[in-house]
Image 1 (tube, rainbow, N blue to C red):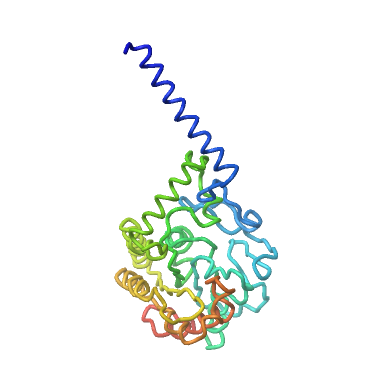
Image 2: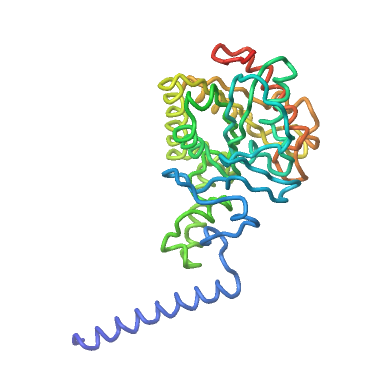
Length: 333
């Protein structure tokens, strides 16, 4: 066969492949769009409450000085972009300033600002005779890696006297798969193609089955790169704590389900607690206290693991008692 016919056949073959790819892409777009990692994933009210962050490596943050009805009640922020409870009070003499960092479990998704555990902790400490202000730096969708950036760039001994980090089992996530993370993350070229997003989703599912038997929370605590990144991030938090003389504490949240019978993640709690302790960060497992109450009371809604107002209250009371026993807890009497 001469060169001319060979090139023609190659061209026909490539054209056929291209047509097949285009047909598959159009078919997916029309009949079955792939929503995994779609650019600018939709989040109701995303830009009313959130904005791009000026902190390097942090995708977004809460807008300062906004008040909007959202997620079970009005959400109000102060001039620093922290959620506040909106209740006027006499600040009284200066005391201890505490920063609560975390994701939607700390922010208080689905509950009022005065019901979220950081604000309940402030009230409980006051009831116990401590002069403390607890600032809520929680932001929905933040990972443990985002918490480190907040600790590094926004908090220091001149701003706060102690930090309490709320940890949930999806916090090792590094891919922008949470709705807010997806919306504010830079768009990669391949995300514009349904076929390539389908390939990315398939790769994710294969990895989840390999490292977590299909369970995403186990996958995040078993996949080697995720485990290494989690350990490095927690260690960096401990290093910052020591370098700045700023006590950092952690609380590990369980995931309420229909009941506490056969709760599947107790081993992950122990591993995370060990990681915090190895980094010099005292950590509290909330699981035992949560298991003392019916799971249905502690979940926000059926099939939604976010803490209910009851769970936030329980968290604050357990934390207040536990923190008072810690050597580095600054108190504030």
